[in-house]
Length: 197
Image (cartoon, rainbow, N blue to C red; front, side, top):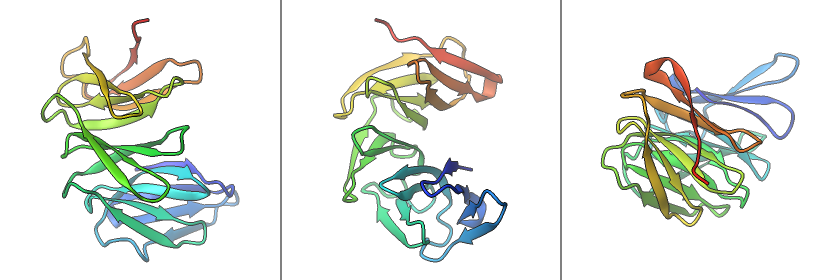
């Protein structure tokens, strides 16, 4: 489900249904890692911080970390069965992630401390998250058909309705020039968020 360039020059990916992580070298050699992961944890999203790989464990309600030599550490999240999914590394060094069942955004710092912030719309089904150049977090609300915006201190700035009905917003990304794009999965389209100045 997830894929990311590792800090050591290899590419890492998650094998959600096998509850493994994989690594492929530029020469095509693949190594899989499962030791130390909670069985059935279903890893999804992957990000890099401080030379390690961090990943969400959807079924286990945890955030995991794996070193480049395969050592795994897991961090249980405060809300049980919160279903962490998409993750993003903030320029301040924190990692942010969406918690679909908890209806919240979570943040994990370098020491493994987790803070959660709920969003205002109930059962929004958060799916994707990204960081804009100004440091604000933007996230998709799949069920409520909205795009949300949160400041790095956890303040929800706003939740904005998507023009097309039932588009199924999922992934979201900020381009280097500050433009924000999201996948409208159920509509078979790409949407753009244009913040008001």
